Length: 482
Image 1 (cartoon, one colour):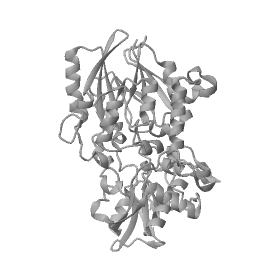
Image 2: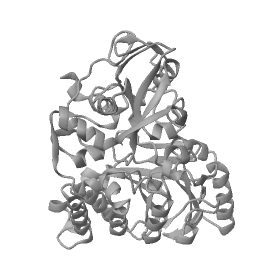
Image 3: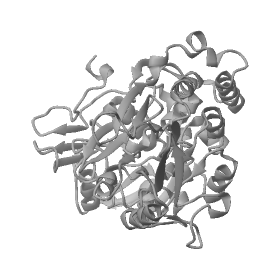
C-alpha cells in the first residue's frame, strides 16, 4: 500500500534545532520502500535562520530526510526568484508546479528541473502528482511581483488529463492554496495534501481526502492511499513530540548520524548569525501562539504596534496578525534572534497618511469576514493610538477614537505599518501606495530599539473591544488574565 508523509509550512522550525531533528527523526522512523516524503510549501522561509541564510538552511533538512517531492508556497519566494531557482537546483527533491510562471511567462524553474506534474511508482502503484500555488502570491509577497500565477483549477485539469493519458492508479495534489483546496476537491483527485492555512485539517470533501498538518513542524501526517477498508485514502496524525528527546531516545540522532548532523549544523548556523545577545527582559511572558494572535487584542500585538508608533512618531499604528509569527513566548532574556523570529522579514515600516474615512475602513478590515483566509472569527490586525469598538456581531465598527478623541472623518492621520500592507490587496485593501508619506526602520530593528528603551512588556488596555465593553478576544493570552 503506498503511503505519503506530508509536512508543510514548517517555516521557523530551523530556529529550533531540537525540534527540527525531532521532525526529521519521525520522518526517518516512518519512511520506507512504500513511502514518499512530500512537502506542500513554505518550507524554506520565513524565520531567523531563513533570513540569514536566504532560505538555504532548508537544504540541511531536505537532504537529511530525503524529501521526494515539493511544491512552492508564497514564502518560498521571500528572497526573490533567483534565490528560489538556486535553491531548487541544489535540492535533492523534485519540485512540482503547474501554475507558477517566470518573468518571461514560461514555467518557473524549468531549467532547474521544475515539472508541472510527475508520476512515481510506489508499492506497485503509479501515483500522479500535481503541484499548485496560491494565485494571490504576487499580492502576498512583494518579491514575487514579476512572476505569474495561473488559475489553479484549469492548471490542475490540464495536468490531470496528461496524467490519465500516461496511466495512473492515484491522483494527488500537492497544494499551497489554503481554502482553495475545496475547489480542487471537485476534480478527480484522490487526495489533496494542503498547506498555506496554518490550522490542521483532515476531512473528506466530495470523496476526496483533504489534509493540512499545521505550521512549524509540530505535526506530520501519514496518508495511506490504499487502506484495507474503504475507497477513500486514510490519514494518521503524528505529533512530533511523540518521538521524545531526539538525543536521548532516538539512535538515529546519535553522534555522527545524519539527523544529529542536521541538529549540529543548524546550531552552528544559529551561533554564526551572532544574534544571541540579550536586547531586553520580559518580566511576564508575551504569548505569540497563533490562537492568541488571531483572537483579538493581545499583549504581543500591542507591544509591536506600540513600537511602530513610537519609532515613526505617528498618530496610529497597524500590524497585520499574519505578520506575527508563532513560536515560544517571549520570556526572560529576549535576544535579537527572538525578536526576528516574531517578525522575520527584511521589511520597512512605512508612514501612511490616511483620511479619517479611510482609517475607519482600514480598521473594519481587521474583521475575520473580510480576509479570505483563516477562520471567520479571526482578527487580522493589531493597533496602537486608536480604540475600536465593534458592534455585538463583531463584524462592523461602531466607534473609533484616536488619541482619546472621536475619529474625525475629514481629518488626515498618520499611520505606521509594515510596507507589505501598502503592496498587498489581500489584506487591508484600503491601504495602498498612494497613502505612502515616509519610511521608518526595519520591523524587527524598530521593535528591538523599543525593547531596549521600554523593555519587553505590554498590557491589555481595551483598545479593541465589542460594544458590551468586553475585550475583543476569542481566546485569552494566559498572561492577559493575570
